[in-house]
Amino acid sequence: MRLLILGGSWFLGRTIAEQAIANGHDVTTFRRGRTGSDVGGVSTIRGDRTDPASLVRLAEAGPWDVVIDTSSFVPRETLALTRALEPVTTRYVLVSTVSVYEGWPTHPLAEDSPVLDCPADAGPGYGYDGDPGPTTYGFGKAGCERAVLEVFGSARTLLLRPGVILGPWEYVGRLEWWLRRMVRGGRVLAPGRCGRLIQPIDVRDVAAFALRPHLTGIFNVVAKGRDTMGDLLSACSTVTGSTAILEWVTDEQWLIEQGVRQWTELPLWRSYHGAWSVDADRARQAGLTCRPIQETVADTWQWLLAGGAAVEHERAGELGITPAREHDILRLWDAVQLDHCGA
Image (cartoon, rainbow, N blue to C red; front, side, top):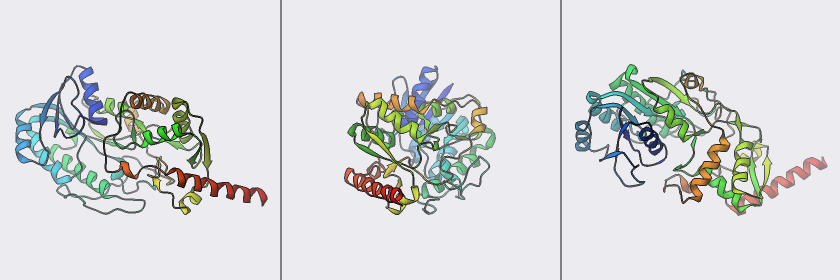
């Protein structure tokens, strides 16, 4: 199979490239070359998806059996890109997100849940940011989906809607933060219930599903929900050899009242009902398999020990609670527990 990856140097794009090469495919990546590095065995076309001349050169390098797009965010750019590639491409795979759903993250979701309305020719920043949702990011991805479908049609398009992707080469650093927090030891503020089911998916499992031949349609791509927040944090403690003590603050509303920011200050913590209630049965029936969270955590830690580090990302600076603030929150929680015992 002759495969073009838009991106291909970091996290999901890189993992897709590595797996495709291992599977014997002829792989080309299209990237600017500003971050990351080329995967061994791929051919690389340097260019910018916002540059018309780059798109002409890219189309001239075809034809392609499949294009896998891991880096679409602005609908009108995706529209121009798909128009350039449609004559020389059999099938288009777009990596989208569960954030395209109107109900994310407050309601349980399936592929037929309503999607945010964004035109295929929208520019950057279309839509608005709500609390807890929707987001301009979700609007943009919804517009990118529409752009691909308008040009390629449903019979030639695969739309993947992952939730949280973790694993080696993660570019934001959510899992890395928890691993390094365990290394520091002491009392760790663990948010919510230990037994809450969560649905992060390993980057390698997303990549394997994206590479399934001839697959078209719309699929949520998340883990089944067999792992828990306790499994995640315990795995982080185990693989790092930590002596940290997990202190579960089970009253999430109390945490919110203390101003603790969900998703960022305590990475991967969300209290909303729909955050980890995404139905992916359709993908599993089509061949999606997901490894346990313990394997993802262990392999990410080994990658970090080998010198891996998250790329400088605009969201990375938002991650994590400071040691002083964590200490203060836990001290206040101790007082709450004492009050309950004395009541």
